[in-house]
Amino acid sequence: MSDFNTSIIEEFRANEGKVGGRFEGVSLILIHHVGTRSGTERVTPVTCFPQPDGRFAIIASNGGAPTNPNWYYNLKARPEINVEFGTETFAVTVRELAGTEREELWAEVVSTEPGVVQTQNRTTRTIPVLLLTRISRRPIGTGPTASPLPLSKASAGPVTSVAPPRRVRQAVNHGKSKKGDDYE
Image (cartoon, rainbow, N blue to C red; front, side, top):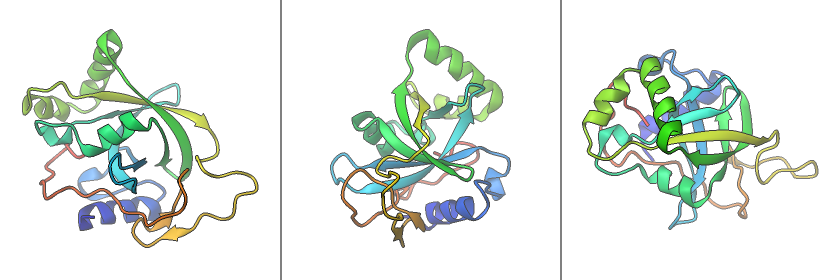
């Protein structure tokens, strides 16, 4: 895992979901997802766009790369995940938007963060827009009789997973440089 992602996650958790530097004032959400091939739980910081109804929009821009980020495929394969936003951890369902619904939310994202247009212009693919909807107050894999969540050195926080406990690794940026407002 990159030191960059590790530092963002640690700062996020230490400051009630707030991160400084180039992410000052940007809403971030930590998505917990399981690798489709590895089965390994990962935690990835992603820019999000909170909606008035309590849902969250995220975009799979991958900095304008020609392919979607790996986490996108993990969410498509397992669309029920845990997320961290602010000081809360909760379960959500993930749904990719299409057609008019996607275009309307994309226009809202662009009005909030005009830099995403530049990211879209760097690629020929249409950047996916995903909507996260809370499904419960309790994270997936926990319950009233569940034991306290184990801490992971890799994620610097609780491990929450439906699968049996295993080593947790966070997503790696694979050496790609993240510039400006196109961070995933």
